[in-house]
Amino acid sequence: MKANSLFLSMSLEGVKVAGILFDAIFDTEPNNPAVLSMYAWYFTAEANVGLRDWNVGKDMIETARRAVQYGPNLSYANSLFCWPYG
Image (cartoon, rainbow, N blue to C red; front, side):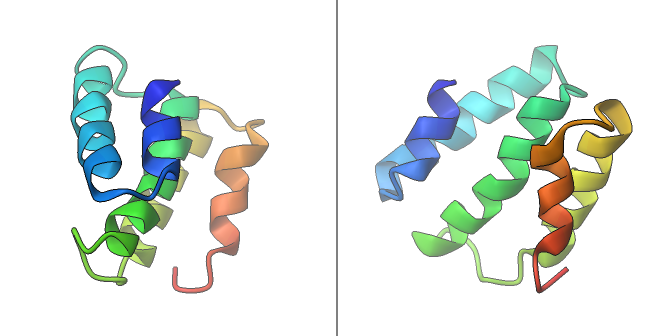
């Protein structure tokens, strides 16, 4: 998925474009567990490039809970519960 590779670039422009792509994806697939998992990790990219502060734990955990709700066997979503600031 393009949004994932863009936010993993950790460039300001890449993270901004990834945010736009995530918004578009959520318009059609708001409960896609794979997308929700990637979106939860996206919060750290936003913090890394200065688009938000590092107080991302709450948002990550809430998004991870939604991802697990819709895809309980998706290990990527479950790994978010290891985030130390949640």
